[in-house]
Length: 281
Ligand code: AMP
Image 1 (tube, helix red, strand yellow):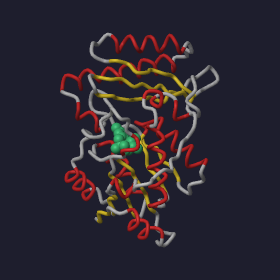
Image 2 (tube, rainbow, N blue to C red):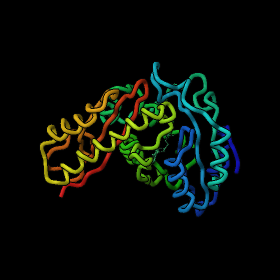
Image 3 (tube, helix red, strand yellow):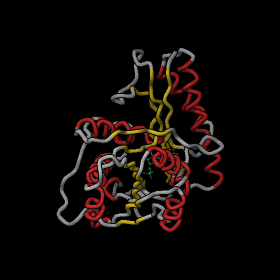
């Protein structure tokens, strides 16, 4: 397994490859867990060559967010990648990704302002910019993303299509812990009581899913019922609980057969997100 820190070197190595070698790419911010590993395993199976990036991307953090305290257990991450059969870990230095004078950003309009975008201005601009850079540096055949970050996946698919990136995007199911809590690097900020408490998010999503599948189309009522389940447990502040259209993230109406139930909450200072795709009968 090679560890490469320079975008130029990785770019030179991969752009001159034989076209018949299939390259899979999994972008991550590190602190690797079972969710990341499910993407890595799938990409390993489906490609001849596998690149994983580990980069805590400063451009997607707001000024008062957790950039400095974001976990960076790089030794353990590299060991996990080696064990999973990764060919290259791209672990770029921030100053090489954003050198002095950097001023070019990619914005996926509208979609980036909704849901998480409303409370994290600039977040998805940072994500779209870094992923554009990665796609140019790595030129993968397939990009692997997680459903856990549903809005991110929708935005990046839009970007790939709008800007004609020659890459296929695959979105993998959310890996959960026993109580249903979506596995996340930020779960490291939670204590055991908070982890137990966060299990209620999966309960609330499932209740909404059950009602929608059962034919209930009064989404406002469903949302308030699901919010009540969360409110019954003290210590969770809901940022949003929404039922939206999967293509444009606008409020779902009765025409949408498949909808996205999505939420963001705060437990103490930790922001958690989760979602469920529901198919109406
Ligand atoms: P991150 O390191 O949080 O930026 O995540 C890197 C990739 O892993 C993204 O595509 C995420 O959607 C995906 N991911 C994170 N958590 C999970 C999970 N619990 N299940 C599946 N994929 C995940």
